[in-house]
Image (cartoon, rainbow, N blue to C red; front, side, top):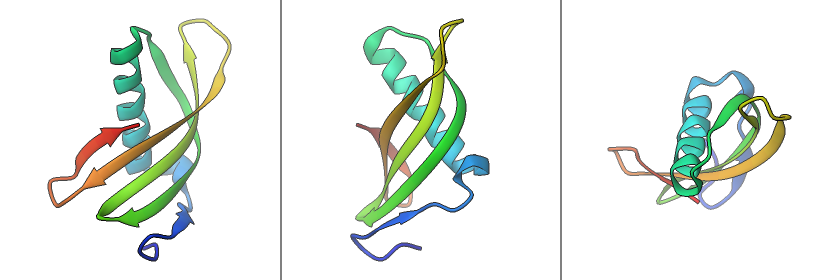
Amino acid sequence: MATLGGNRVVEGSQNSIEIQNLAHFALEEHNKKSNSSLELVRVISAKEQVVAGSIYEITMEAKDGDEKKQVYEAMVELQGAARVQACY
C-alpha cells in the first residue's frame, strides 16, 4: 500500500491482472472517444497514488490493427468500495 498522496511503483505490474484490466479499460475509453481500435499488447509499468481512492499511471504498449506498436500512458482513477473507474 502506498503512503497517502505518495506515488509508488506497482511491483509486478506487467503480470498483474488488475493492472491489465485497468489498461484494457483505459484503451476502451480512448477508443470510444477517438473512434479508434487500439489493442493492448503489454503493460510496461504502473505507478499508484493513494488519494480518496487510487490513481494509477499506466505505461503500456498498444497497436491499432496491423500498425506498429507504440507506447501510451493512461491515468485511471478508482474510487470507493464500488471501485468506480474514470480515465484521463
